[in-house]
Image (tube, rainbow, N blue to C red):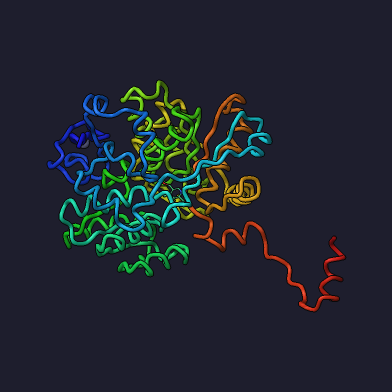
Length: 418
Ligand SMILES: *Cc1c(COP(=O)(O)O)cnc(C)c1O
Ligand SMILES: [Zn+2]
C-alpha cells in the first residue's frame, strides 16, 4: 500500500495514517485532509501499459492507487455490486460538439453505476475502509445519492448503515435507502444540518462516518473517474472538464486523480476544471468571484437537489482545483438545468438527473461566454441517473397527451398532428 498519510488543506500539517481519522484536529471540519501517497514507490511499481490492460472493468483496476490494504481489496472486489463500481462509459457527443462549434464533447455517464450515481465510487471505497477500521455500523448524511450509494455498498458487504437525509430528498432516492435495508432518518432540515447531525451521531454511537470530504477517503474513490478519462481517451487528459458542484468533492476528486497521473509522470498537463453550480446554491461560485480561498455559508435553493449545498464541505480543495488548473466557476439557472436535461437526453441519449445536467448547462454557458476554445476536447460529467428524479424530468418536458384507445378515434387525433 502506497498510502503514507494525510495533509490538512487549511494549515498544511501532515499526519501518519493511523494518527487521525477524519479531519485535521487543529482546524476541525474546515481542515479536510488530502490523502498522501509514496509516488516514487508507485512510479517504480506501476507500468501504465500494464494498468491499461488490467482485466477489472471497475475502479478496482486502480487498486494500487487506492488507500486500502490488499486483503480489504480482495474482499471488496468480490462483493456483489462493488465489483462493477466505475468504468462507466464515455460517449462522444457528436451533435452537441457540432452545435457548440467544438472539436469534441464527451459525456461520461456515471448514472450507469450500481446505485445510479457517481457517489458509488466514494461509497465503495469508504465502506471497505469501514471494514478495515473494524466498524460495525456506517453512517452518512447526504442529499440522497451518497446515502443511496453507501446503503447499497453496505448491503453488499453485510454492514449495517444509518442514513440522515433531508426529508425533501426525491422519493426515488429515499426508496433506494429503504430497499437496501438502511436505517433511514428523514431530517426536518437541510442537507447542511443533516451533515452536522450525522457527525454528532457517529461520535455518540461509535459509527464510521462517510460524510463527504469530512471522511478523507471519499475524494480517493472519486478520483478514479479521472483515471478512467485518461484511459478512455487513449492515455491522455482532456482539455477541459465540466462538473456539477455542491460540496466540491467530485471536483476535488477529479483534480486529485489527474494530479496523481501527473505525479506518476503519465500526463504532462492537467485539464482545466470548470465547476458548475446552481444559481440558488452558489457558495463556491461566490467565493471564487471574491477570490476567497474558502466559502461562506449561504442559503441553498435549487431543483438540482444533489447540489443544493449551502455549506460546501470540500470548499478549499475545490477552489484550489479550479484556480490551479486555470478554470472557473459558473452558475446556471434552474430553467437552464431543465433545458440541459432535455438536451442531454435528446442529443446524446443520456437521461441524467437535474444536478448532472447542470454540468451541460455550464458548458453551454461557458461556450456562450467565449470561455471554451473551438479546438478543445471537452468532457461533461453526467453524475447521476435521471430515474432518480422523475418529477423533474416531467417538469422539463410537460405531460404526454392522452388519446382514446379506439382506433378510428385515435387516428383522427393523430391525423390532426401528422
Ligand atoms: C453529489 C453530486 C454532485 C456534486 O458533488 P459534490 O461533491 O457535492 O460537489 C453532482 N451531481 C450529482 C448527481 C451528485 O449526486
Ligand atoms: Zn489543519
